[in-house]
Length: 85
Image (tube, rainbow, N blue to C red; front, side, top):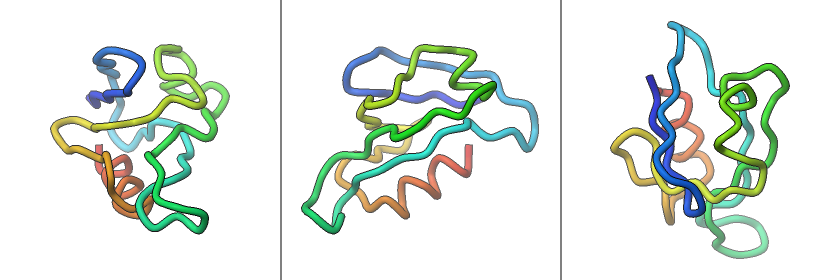
């Protein structure tokens, strides 16, 4: 189970099977080439858990996954947090 928090939507709890990913790619983060920006959902994969749930949308700013804050972190840190759900 994964709980995602976005800046525009409330709590989103998703049921995951063992080994199943969320199905998203992200952009942004501290130290981005242009400037420090929040972590945003770049893409949601078709038929993924997030696409089927339809609460998190492309362009949403992600601020936390489970109990881990991913606001003002690097993209690598956020990616690792999302991969460890």
